[in-house]
Length: 386
Length: 130
Image (cartoon, rainbow over all chains, first blue to last red):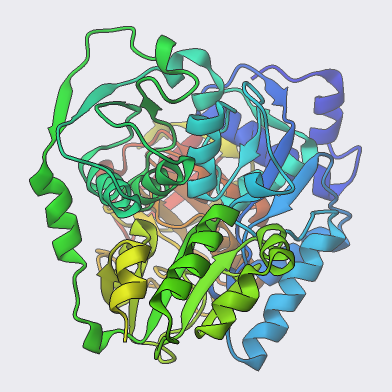
């Protein structure tokens, strides 16, 4: 990989240990994946925040890195934190402080695009958080590989990323056509479609025909489920997403999705209400319209829920919900909006045993953690819940 | 036997070889306190990797695995060098931040645990005693 004189000096340690290590990571990744050079990035989104995931090993690394003078050089936002007992929260606060010391905005959301960090079409960025990666690539048309926590942090510090993978035009073309014969209408239909395809496809760039999502949130949900049950980082939707016109260049294999495929996913997550002790909405973090919908559904229901309903959202969306009065309505019915956090990365096993959710991504993870899971649209969940 | 691969992280090391023929997840697969393989699907489960030369086809699992490699180093339980068939983000990043010599492009199926091996990562070379 070609390096400029300045980049060579960073690699040689002339600018200190932290920059040197960050540059070593980028150069190694560039060499592994055949990048020709480093390219500047507009922003970074860093995962590896929950203490449940990174543990003491992660804290130790971050502390050493901060002590060595690590500072980000581009605008960088942060993934959600975990929620746990007092000891956990103490460690969690330490992680957040270390990231703050590096100059990272502790936004703590998986939907930075609903607030602090909205890239534009064609921007090169280095994001981790698989649901945000697939959103940025597919819906916005920004360009990022599916980074891990440490590699996005290295890119944030240097302000560059190796030029390979989805940064290159030729790798953004569709690799197969998904002909959706199934009727896909609701939020959870899209979640189920994504979940099904994540399991079926490999490292593909699917091109969808036959879907007309009513809301952007439906695509957000589909992508998140696809990125959780599989490793999709970019998709195109005919007539919908920004790069679809140039996406199909070769004759491609076509796979079809039938009603039965969607039904099979819904049936896989249809545990009875008796085993459910919480409702979770907002995975990925809810948009303001999603929060508003829950407030309206609860008002229509007219009586408080017997089990708690949690909406996870960015602090930006929660602040709007607070000032617009939705939070108050939601709390009246035993609901709560939780900012900055994610249940998927929280040690909540033992606190709860079963979740009802409209999120395909949450359904995937909570089932793998051994929870009872009921996957259905928010409208049905709020109507049917005890 | 001399095998030629590619440098991922420079440095030299010599020691006893421990080989996993299966991809390895460091998060949940290696105990950072003891350096013992805990991955239920691993063919070297229960083995110690500390102070040995660790070879496996490639990394898998969470990117947090990089931090586990760092913790192994801090705890004195890290391998002296890492040899992989195919480098990927998790293990390469871990080896860099931990400063562990690493080589890729080696046919792991040719390697067996227990023999002595010398790694010259700067040259991308692995020399195995017959």
